Image (cartoon, rainbow, N blue to C red; front, side, top):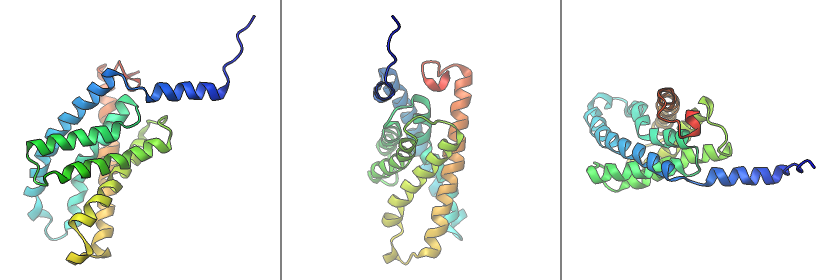
Amino acid sequence: MNASPVPAATSATVASGRLARWRTVDIVVVAVVAVAFGVVFWAWNYVWSFLDPVFAAFRPAQYLIAGVWLMPAVIAPLIVRRPGAAIFAEIVAASVSALLGSVWGLDVLLSGFAQGLGAEVVFAIFLYRAWGLPVAALAGAGAAIGMAVHDIPIYYPPSAGFDMGFYVPVVIAMVASGVVIAGVGGHALVRALARTGVLRAFPSGA
């Protein structure tokens, strides 16, 4: 007797359960990626401050290099393909940056959460099933929107004299940087790692 086919709904439920189940190796690798980027964040904070005079004439342009802070939110999910990886990676990276002495103090934790959440929403919209370049680029843009939602009210409030003439180019620069550096760059980095064979334990390395 032939086995009866598994109902589509049941198959989807099983697949969803497997997707949500984090393995120890997933946790370890996301943590390692996040810690590495936490050190990068700490160094990038000083690069950012050092470049302040370069962008003094048009401050929004400085955000064209802000995508470095968004990379874990794209890279970690692309590697492990698990719900929550973007938020997890950004918060851990931000925590490492804070412990090393971030110039923005503990506010980096809130910033990391907002950026990770922005990317997480994009991956969730695609039901954690699409991992190509277009989705990676959208996730970078989502992380940048999270950055804007956090940074603008805190660092550039209207009460300090900032207006739409400042906000619009800032958001455009953030999103462009998120798409190019975090999205396209992050996707390229994961593909390069996959070619070396170090991601064999993950779907991204198949």
